[in-house]
Image 1 (cartoon, helix red, strand yellow):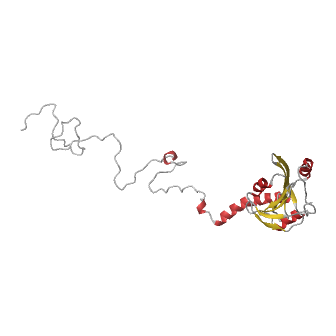
Image 2 (cartoon, rainbow, N blue to C red):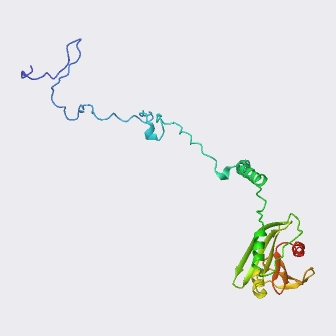
Length: 255
């Protein structure tokens, strides 16, 4: 016979009567040593997914990925293609370079054609030497000669009469038929000062067979040459980069 049990003691045997489910005590004593304790489920973040299972990631907005619009940041997405860039100069083909040059050269060619054809761009500006010649003759400081009988393709491009303390000088510039330059100089400045200044230290090269006086051939500055006539009252110089034949033609025309 078992000893009497206290009235508030829960029977150790929880076996229910036949046909009833087992009943657990809600206020039982703490678990015995060696038995696992019951732990309440944690309320923190969800556990990490097992290895091998893909993690679901929320879509990332365009601002986070540097693009416009939304793209799901799911593993395996392909990056957006890079923006198309213009060809650099080194990558341009010869055909592209030729076309670029033509775009620049065609307007320039049209402007040059208009300038030459309609505005006379190749024609030199001509002047009338008569006022300078009349001024020199009115001063009456030396005899003044002018060319006579020159063809129309001899064009006068400059004419000036100038006085200075040592004398006066008349200079008339011409453009020859061959497109070269020639200048007629008449002056009463002493020859020893005039020749070095006009010929840049040119040296005599012998006489020249010309009518109207004893002409001499001289070297001059650069590739120029000169014909010089020394007279008591004046010195006449025909100088320029024109050929000797044209310089002689100008000297022979003086009257």
